[in-house]
Image (tube, rainbow, N blue to C red):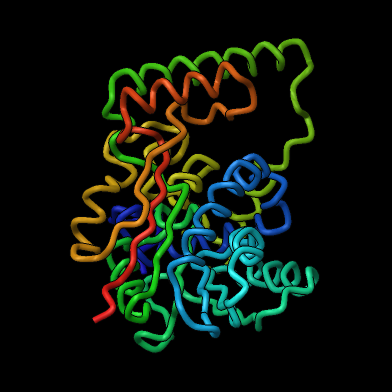
Length: 320
């Protein structure tokens, strides 16, 4: 495996992306729910709605649900109350630490289905073909080194008539829209100016954990020989590799980052039933916590229905 600083294009190295994601999420597992609190709260209703749709479509009393990139178990925790016929949950993640927290959380809730965990790359899953009823994935695909291989695995492991549900993925169309891009840049600049002002005034958040997480990630990467000990890497480099397919990877703005959800369906799920395909978060990271933001999001969604910064997708495999 090539190391940082050697003749390589690190971000195109699938093994490097997988290794950095593994180490990063092992380190971040302890703080994940705290640092992603807004996402976990804002996506709950979406996943509950998806679960209600799935519950009406699937037959059988012994459904198997595989949660891809399970993290700390957010998706199963959100959907299971609406999917009473799920008898087994398989949590898949590249991070053992994340999987421990998933298992602890689900067992602690007294959830009835059998829970098992699998530590592996999403592109290479040790599961039988046609063995899974439902595959779910929240904010996962942009971390995966080879998204095309991941989608092939989803198609392989789903049983005939099975359902794949994907949400909170970056939409490639958003940064190509000049209106949404302009609003995004204005928000970023104003947020940076506000943080700078708070820092000057001594009112900034002095207790942030993010720099410590990245420092520990880099230390472990060097200790494991994943990157050279003398390599010059920082928090932005780690973020750019962890969020390798995000349009804002490394806190930059990569115009070709993200995925085109409509092209994704055409490429990987042609002939499947498309149950849901929508884009949302047209104001980017501005949370819909007040009427002004909700109104702005609704207006932009009407004007640019395919260009929200995030998208959700639910497709069903043909029965034959």
